[in-house]
Length: 312
Image (cartoon, rainbow, N blue to C red; front, side, top):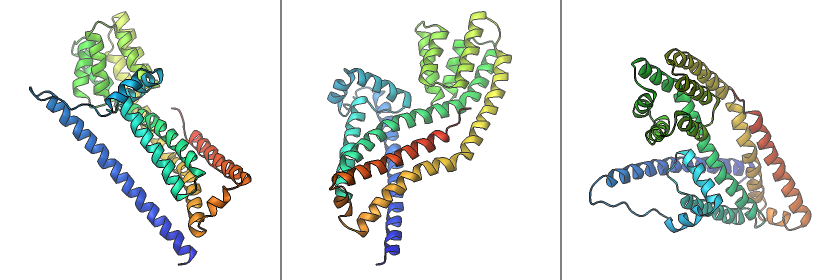
């Protein structure tokens, strides 16, 4: 087998592995949603008890720490059903698996590096989930403003309008508005309830909406015209964000292609010359050069991602 045929074989196997991984993650996420819905339905049936939460003991230990409480807040902001204990257990498994795979596929020197990258990827997963949920909520803001304007025009109070919007809108807007409605029912002020929403899902669009509702509740004036004008503005900003995301999609793909090319080059080198990575990392100079090369890939990834982020 020639070197070019080997390269194409490795690329084909890598593409197939990535495809199977994506399909597996999609099936796993769907299974978790179905299981959560089934457990919720069973909880409403008399005489049926919910099964114990996995890693409950670890979850209690993690929640006692300050880091665990911060982690719980981040998990709540992502909208997932993961508990801090489950996340720690899953993250530990991912880190251990990455260490073992890098040790076996590349060289023992790459095991700790792969573990660090796996830990960073686990924490980045939370940021990514939170960002996706935030963007989905921003996309629902025009509809939210329209529902509130219609309810207010019909003569309903703000609290009633919020409860109506929570029933009509899908997640994440419906879930977040349900928390706001619960806070209002418990006696919290409009400013405090909406401030909690703004803290969980920070965005410029939500700041404008919250400011409009708070000022209206303080002054007691009508907010129908303000909400209708805000609806038009939010629709325009939504289209602008969509256009920017489409134009910057190539840059985003490039950012992820850079480290993939580096890892693929190491894999090809080790396949064409078995033991080359072990020999290269066997000396101090070789380890330094490998660390410098990996650092340059990380810096390149970070710079490209930073350039592709445009605040609107």
